[in-house]
Amino acid sequence: MTLTERIKEKAYELGFDLVGVAPATRAPHADAYASWVDAGYAAAMGYMVRDVARRQDPCHVLPDARSVVVVGLSYFVANPPADLWDDPSRGRVARYAWGLDYHDVMTPRLRQLADFITRQARRDVQHRVYVDTGPVLERDFAVQAGLGFIGKNTCLINPTMGSYLFLGEILVGLELDFDEPAARPGVGGTRGRVGTCGACTRCLKVCPTRAFPAPYVLDGNRCISYLTIELKGSIPPDLRPLMGNWIFGCDECQAICPWPRRFAQPTRASFLRFDPNLAAPKLLDLMGLTDEQFRARFRGTPLWRAKRRGLLRNVAVALGNWGDPQAIPALRRALDDPEPLIREHAAWALAKLGPSAR
Ligand code: SF4
Image (cartoon, rainbow, N blue to C red; front, side, top):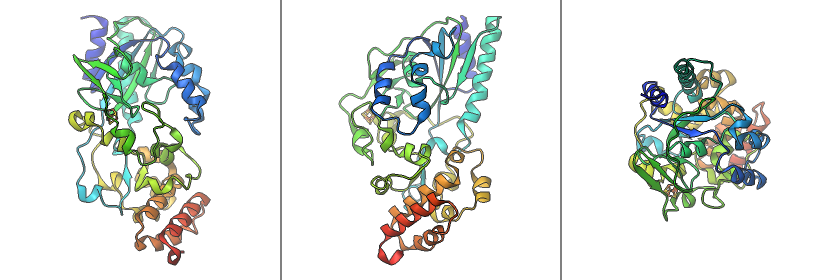
């Protein structure tokens, strides 16, 4: 077995579903990324604006980098019971967040893989491990490594597994055997199967906030995932009514996509499952959460990132969109919350419920 084959075998042994190797050269979409940032589509995600040059070329991160080992792990959990998932008195949480924080699970496994590479190479190999947090255009390298193609919804789509995939990378100072990259933008090859969006535009049409100004381009300013997770301040009032009951992330553009609908493979990761208290919690229960209760319930999960102020801001919007008078007492109590952000969104929700709710 070659070194690359041994690395791939180890990656599968560690529980990853996909693994491939790309050359550590300038990312194919480096210029498109800079244009995306220039257009303001990174919104308030300052880290994406600051690190443009580093993201364009992995050698700016690790000068000795020669290869990028890219891994994928399915996070698909079967569709939840409709009576819970379609209940507007419950919030919706994006699938990737239905359990422990994936960074905490993926990162140690990738470090184990990096240690394996060093041992197998019998010398100290320069490397960097990233799970979504580093300055790497990971989907570009995933395509180059043969893991799939980038869909019009900007997700990496694997023709045998769909798009509910966590990605991770190791930049390595070793020249490994590279996989076949995608033949052209929007088309990829994986284990003999190719994929493409073709004439489909479902994801572009289904997006509640119209966050795709063009195919393959996502305007972060309008994306519900950005609004509910990354945005720290006030949600633009014109977008609030469009957010429905999404309170942390959004899966609309993946849920409509024929590729995951047909090919998504249930996750093998035991840290993810449908628990209504995490994936579809009752909005009224959340609106009353104290700091202490928030910490006890969400520590160690991705929702921790939103903090109480962000989550309850989102919950207030969802209660306004629910439009049921049952929400009025909880929203009125929230008008006295010590956090101004929560008070502001509770007032908006009460106004949306009508003059008698104020
Ligand atoms: Fe491509 Fe259609 Fe999937 Fe969108 S919904 S990513 S256009 S296949």
